Length: 204
Ligand code: 5GP
View 1 (cartoon, protein in one colour):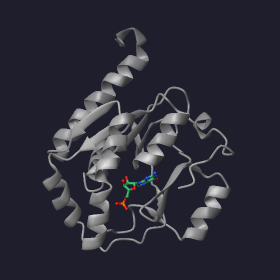
View 2 (view 1 turned 135 degrees about the vertical axis):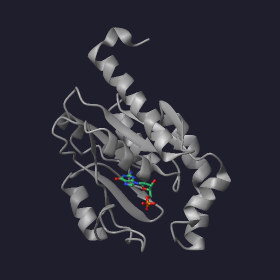
View 3 (view 1 turned 90 degrees about the vertical axis):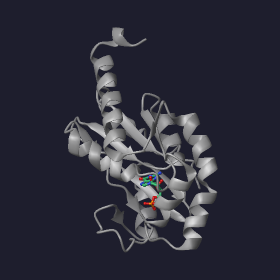
View 4 (view 1 turned 45 degrees about the vertical axis):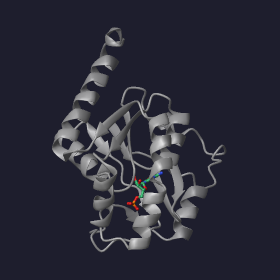
């Protein structure tokens, strides 16, 4: 991946100092997407970013999951500095468009290279690593998405590296043993962080 985006203006200047920037990371199949959707359904102060990708739409997807574009379109958007972060992951490009969150807390669901970019630009970002209860469970979830066996194997092969980087980047680790339970745990983390923002003396 070409991660040198030094010519890109500091996109985070577009975010007010107040809102939280929350980044969900974790290996493929861990359920980040389900948790992200549950979080915004439960908390109207959260605004979920819709990423762009060059990967083909899965048969199980309805098209709302991403803004699906071809590579030329994505690369043009990079040149036009339209991404907060972007990364190449297993041969496809993924990127977060500049947020239009109108003061809400911004929620991203991205992989670790992008999260590293976000962290560098915005050290205050709240990075939450989502883990599966076990590797067996993760493998089963990856298989259930209907991807080819080869794709599943490729995704599993990068899991240890993703996890190692994820632990380096994250401030919180949440196990997705149950989407509702994991969502509640994250909602209470966010509530505590908001209280700390309102009253910094609560920070230990
Ligand atoms: P999938 O192809 O399985 O939907 O996603 C592959 C990986 O890309 C997942 O870890 C997902 O979180 C990540 N991803 C989705 N959107 C973005 C994005 O905008 N930026 C980055 N860096 N990663 C993304």
